[in-house]
Image 1: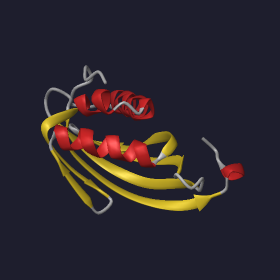
Image 2: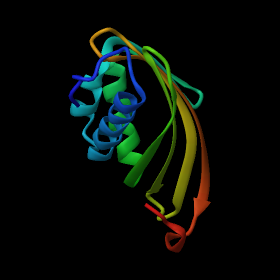
Image 3: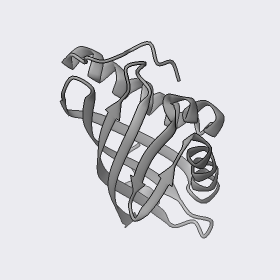
Image 4: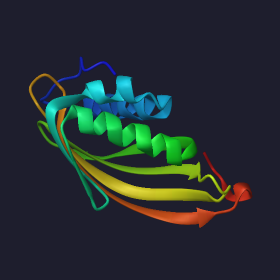
Length: 135
């Protein structure tokens, strides 16, 4: 993930940063995705706390081993000088073939280099049928 978009954000650059994050996560490449975060990044993902880029990498490796056929869509909610808020939904299936759609919000804070230093995510999963998939 390139980090050439740096604070302070405009609505246009915030939306571009969101698209970069969506593209990165949809790659399902933990090595690539973790480079968008500071070495000492702090996360809350649901009830899990993740600290540091290496923990992010391990977290994502585990996530995409469990969440098969993962597909994500993020959308702009708001931004400030070095912060962006997004809404998102993603779909995946588990190893038993059950599909889910996850809905949530994320609050992001960036350093001066455009790396994400804080990510707070609230997420809810809803079981769906394969026919109900949208993504």
